[in-house]
Every structure is written in structure tokens, then in C-alpha cells.
Length: 71
Image (cartoon, helix red, strand yellow):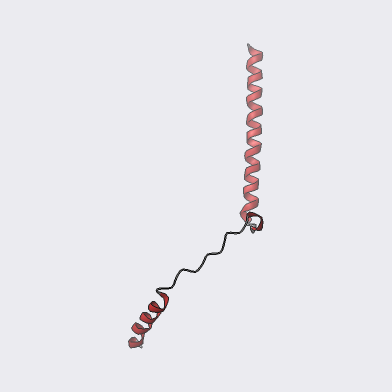
């Protein structure tokens, strides 16, 4: 058994070496992309960021109006 291990390993290494790399498939277009569970999470996160930006904008506008009214 031990005698066969070394020749088999060498044979496997010789069989695997020297081959050109397998051609890679062209990337899929974005429309054919498979949905993942994280897609919904990313959409929700972006929606939350958009809402936060709108709230910040409204708060800044209110601050500006209050400052103008105080002067």
C-alpha cells in the first residue's frame, strides 16, 4: 500500500500539471442576475438612508426659518 501511494501521487500531479486554464464564462448581464436574500436588505437600507436625508433636509430648513424669525 505504501509503495503505491508515492507513484499514485506522482501520477496525479503529472496528470494535472501542464493543462491550460479552463476558459472562464463571460459575465452575465445585470438583467440576468439572480436575486439574493441580501438584495431586499440593501433596498431597505437605501430607503432608510433616503428617508434620513429627507428628514435632515427638513430639519435644516426649519432651523434656518427659526433663526430668521429670531433675528
